[in-house]
Length: 409
Image 1 (cartoon, one colour):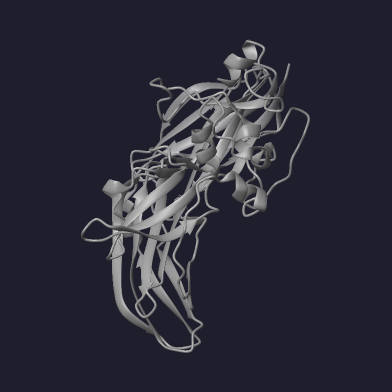
Image 2 (cartoon, rainbow, N blue to C red):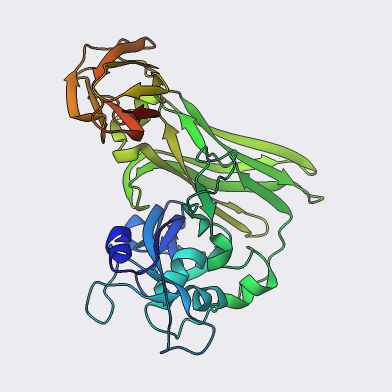
């Protein structure tokens, strides 16, 4: 879509939104339902939060809108919902999205929800009555990114090693938690007042090394002057990058855990490699969920967090420069992090101007052993070129690495 728009003379850029909400019912919110025992009711959870979603911004005038709403407009070549009976999305003015002007065409409510929806958690009892048990206002629309214009260089950040990334979050929304951002969120909810004298924290994870066991930690702090009794449920599951649950891995119920006055308690759930490995789906995304209740005050805590099993990177040692039609050798390696042998192994090597896509069969790689091989290629075109190497096996797929090589004549 970027290429097509630019070929037509329309300025365009690719945009990636992390923690991208998919609102199915037009409520501009993401609704999750839980049972009284604390387990997610997946068949009712139609709304979801995608690990990421990609669309485009195009620059154009909007004479159909009031002054001030021209400029960058969001369009989506892979729309998630029908718009007036047709699967399309946009153009939606970024200025309208930022201001919460969801009445302006086109599809502004849906794009607004993608970057700024609140997450509502509902408890469903045995007679199908729902009670709001938690609202999360800050977990959707994170680190909205595009590529820096040519000639500009960014910096390496703790969560991203791509110096070409430009953060455009503030073009889509005000700072999370600010008065302006809260005003823009049109849907409000009235929550009943509770005496919250017990604090909870489901410890968030960014990544877990693929192959390692890991723990889910729930921290409980009783700040009241009386002992408190806690019951609840902690679970973990594999999910698709769209946020849809694939397989439940482990569910642990706990009942009437006593927490003494002015004291802390940690509930830990260990998940082993043997438990999660057979349940994984593409890209190795995971979700942990927790719902618990203070029996004395009826205060309920609900939280979910997604994280990714981090695969190793391939190391490529290659010359920084080369010449057309002169042989280049590159050494490729990575360490198998799994407690099992990698079988049916292949290495895909490609790079425009360097190497046509080529799939090379490889030998097995034993547990915790280092895979090493040497590849050779003859560059065909001059300029700055990128060599991309991908290792695949039955047990571990899409282990990637790349390097840049400047080719001269």
